[in-house]
Length: 114
Length: 117
Image 1: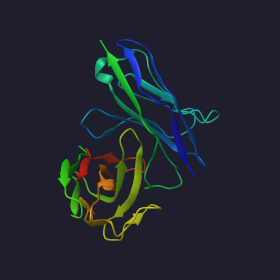
Image 2 (image 1 turned 135 degrees about the vertical axis):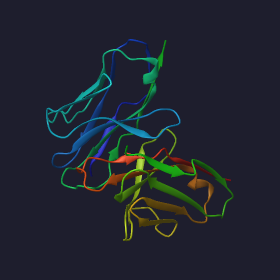
Image 3 (image 1 turned 180 degrees about the vertical axis):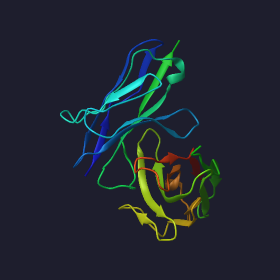
């Protein structure tokens, strides 16, 4: 079945460092890909998404490019801030199953210190 | 816009009792809501898909008689954990898919932490 694998955390960085969180997927067809963020004590929020190959999702300085050839959707940010400390989830949904739920990776905890 | 609330946000109960968790879409209508369960440092696992006016669809391994889902209106779905046991302690999260939006839109509630003593 479909699955998402993301790098184990926690990831600990200093402010203004470059961030990469790896995410790879296994799916039939052409899934839509997402990154969600969960701040302490809050619910999941959609960070960015991409619906087809070579699409780049971006938001709040974060970017991820849908790479079909490597089945990847790595999250990057050029300069992290303390406020970026959160848990980041990579997720997918098969595009031939509209309305179905998302399949999530295990999440990666990011901790940014000043 | 597109806010989903859950109530309660935190509940502690004794083993053997039942607990009801509400999921509400506050500013939109949703024919479909999803219930997830999240263990510490683990991913969200889909438990069931709740459809307004019809029976929920449960994922393999989820006991439908233990986790009762009712989606009685376009803005409310409830999850009742019946005869709760300590192993049911977890973080329960719902999400809602607004009517008429593209398939990719789905909004999450803040979660409910259940602790069974």
